[in-house]
Length: 251
Length: 379
Ligand SMILES: Cc1cc2nc3c(=O)[nH]c(=O)nc-3n(C[C@H](O)[C@H](O)[C@H](O)COP(=O)(O)OP(=O)(O)OC[C@H]3O[C@@H](n4cnc5c(N)ncnc54)[C@H](O)[C@@H]3O)c2cc1C
Image 1 (tube, rainbow over the protein chains, first blue to last red):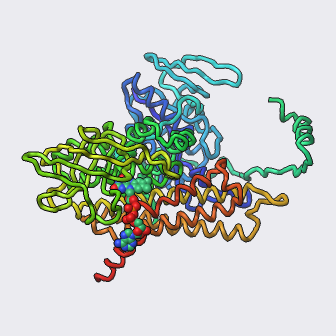
Image 2: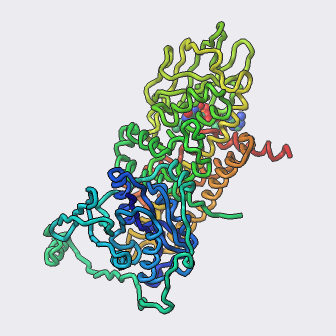
């Protein structure tokens, strides 16, 4: 049984600058988001128990072939990619359709892992849409997964409790970052990543229909303004008093 | 001409950065205090193949080349130059063996410094000379199938770790300077008390004593009479490590200066609002950028040179420029801090004591300039 991990290439968040409350993306390299790396790490661990392969799936522009090396260095066995420049800013319904079509090309799929939301937009819409498209059950917020024959036992991290459920496979499971700390890959595994098998599809190869109009329009996407209060105090006592009145000293 | 890292290089850079931030940074106080790097860090570097990046994977290295090595060493040194120095000297010894060693020597010794439990040392300096190989007084006496070595070697990095040490000594019969391969801690090998270095804390530094150390006659690196040539190549490659290490220290200084300039306020505004501080920030940026591309280029040259000795002029130039610029940048960053920069609570005080090492090791600047001019005038 194979394990699929869907990963998304995003601009390296550490290298983004904000100008006029908008991100400046020039010269910022593409990387994988941290939750996706946690999902991958969980997949690598699961692989031991199911004796399958970890197959990384991703859709994106021409850089995706390069970006996915990071996942192949960190334990992915092969990659299935959909490469098209229009995918860079495609909306989530299109991406879900594309990913579902790519996953259909893979044999013997058992578990399909996603990060709970992408590290850039965090809309979290793709997971459900892929599950619906494939007709598989979906489980969210997984912090632990065990595969037991035709079932997966999933511990879900809910706000004030954990929930353990069983789900028949194949299933789409989205994970929270605490499921696994992503590993630091070794230099040798980075150098070997380029030799791992990759299947690269164009949109036309997938036999799906992409709606021409946009379903989703982003009206505005601005960094929050952090306003300082500009309170000047004259003594420590006064500072403590203010902090207390704002209930900031209670923890 | 493309000024861009490959994806692999970007990833290797972030492996080193992540490892340095996650595994080394939390221990930095302890490393500085005890002047010792915990063994688990060396093991961790070996597990990630960061310990012998340019050495061929046939012998347990990563086979990642010198351009990647520069990137990784810069990131390690940004957090802890001491750790980066251990790696750098290991790679000088291992590279000399990769280039000049026989197949048998490589099979036996290289894995010790790549995946095994050892670390290479490279012993040239003596109490009487650090710059002039002609003045070496260590001796090797031929005795049948053996050589018997006697030497006092000064300031030898990694000499407290097990593994091979390449010792430069004079064959008393032929007068040749040769590199001899010795197993550290064999009979007759001993080390001094550790030197109490003011900076680059953690990198082990001792004097090494060889008293009638007996080694098989085949333990000459590269055969008799090649000592000078080996030194030239090893020094050319060693300067790549030193350039990267002081580039990393410079980056640390730059970051500290910049952070302080934006965090420290005067009359409610960050001091970065002052034009004088802005000049300082621009200066740090300019100097770091110039140094960085010089360092990256020297890695590239090493990867593309058939004969690594050919890059000596360029690697000497990079080494002088980068080590001296590191001092400039640290000085600027310290100025931005005012008196706070002199306090041990501020990282810049430590970086200041680190950067001063660059110009004094692996060839002092004066001599290297003579060497560079010599090459240029040769035409
Ligand atoms: C942290 C650290 C680690 C080290 N690790 C190693 C190691 O692993 N292995 C090793 O072999 N060594 C090592 N060394 C030693 C180091 O490489 C030498 O100390 C260095 O090369 C300088 O030699 P010296 O101190 O003997 O200086 P000298 O050669 O005595 O030079 C002193 C001064 O005289 C000037 N001078 C000397 N000769 C000339 C000349 N011909 N023309 C013009 N000026 C001249 C120099 O410029 C310098 O200013 C290490 C040193 C340190 C601090």
